[in-house]
Image 1 (cartoon, helix red, strand yellow):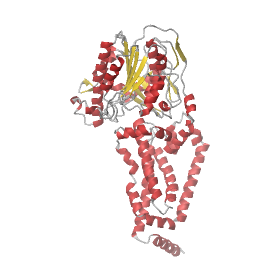
Image 2 (cartoon, one colour; image 1 turned 90 degrees about the vertical axis):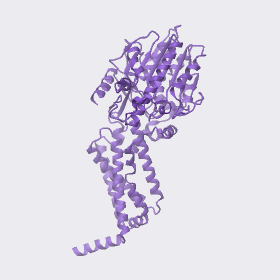
Image 3 (cartoon, one colour; image 1 turned 135 degrees about the horizontal axis):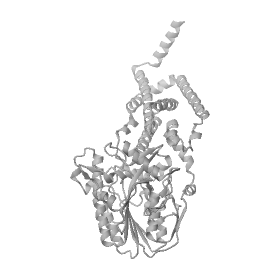
Image 4 (tube, helix red, strand yellow; image 1 turned 120 degrees about the vertical axis):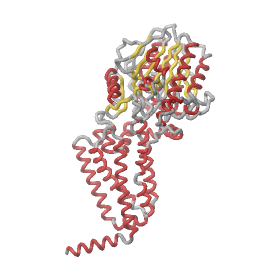
Length: 571
């Protein structure tokens, strides 16, 4: 009896593997599936903060079950076409999602990918997307995939002979998955339980179900545009019913990739940004201001500063076509004597700025085309944009608001090399870090010239300078001002206010927020206004500040300052 069973097994094997190519084909399938499981598990593991070995083992198990349910079905088709399309789509999915996470430290959602496709493609063309060896994880199984394709006729023949075992594997995998999910349901950690939980957050969904499931959950949360508009939380009403005759000129500069720590950084004993460092003693200085850098990228910065509201988490706020920006401080200034102008060295279509800034209330928005400039690297050089802005304002004939968004110091920090090179940084081996320091040195020199010109030509001018987000250097030698709390990355940027009377102040007890910009500007202006905001006037040092909203949470300002200072001290 035993011999009969063994002989049947030998016959089955010999019939299954008629030639050596059959054996190679079977091994190709085996190793392809194993490496596919491993690469998908590694991909998801990398996207979960503080993931440990137990979580990785869980991901390997769950991924294995899904792969064993998926590929046997794909192998049922005689032609390779569907398998090739599926593989290419999978590789692109992993690369795009991993690149986005490496840059934004957040999860990419389908609707966000679609709405910001132009911005993403432009960033890639300008080498601004992450260039990291870990992206090769996406093609870890490529050698076995190629072998599988070459031997696909043999694979297809094996599939026919293994039809029953393959069906059994699919059914068994489905059964194990169902049992596991039932256990999650009983423990109240099924996807329906955690989808709307602030306690768990997105990383828990990615950990348990993967990025695709997380994206599907986000789609269910989106709603229509009107629902998105209604979801903004503005804060309590703040008014000024008295109009003053003193209406100073207001100059705002939003500096690309300027984070808090660069202000005090030195290289070979010298400050990288000596002018900005001098402002820490010669102006009103808030070292740590919370930045909003969500799905609208940099545009979230001006959106939150101008409208004094936290931007949307799952949608690019500045692209809400029917939103009329009722809380814009620019509109409040325009109700008074002010003229408002905005300038940016990129194309206006990027993040819909050419439309949005008019909706904010600006009289004119000048992009690179409107200024009749050309790209030098990516975008127009900051010194040219700042000089252009001052020339436009000469003939304004009224108090002015100038809002400039810089471009030169955009990652990967290659733009400035076309028109400025500081030899002091030539010894730095890390190309990105060297580029960052060189870019910031250029920005520092440019801002010094800009501030000097304003002081020479305007007797009653306020100059507000702040960063938009951290530079994402990825070098241990550069400690960036951010901290991870739960699922989310909190980025901090500096803010400076240069006043006509030379006021000096350094905030050391609490963090500021981008939503503070609007009430500060409005109180400076002396116009009558009414807005709703959680922000405070950053020039009223005795004002009791409200909380800082951040992704559904309300943060005490002193606690946030403590969190970032502790993070920077312990790194």
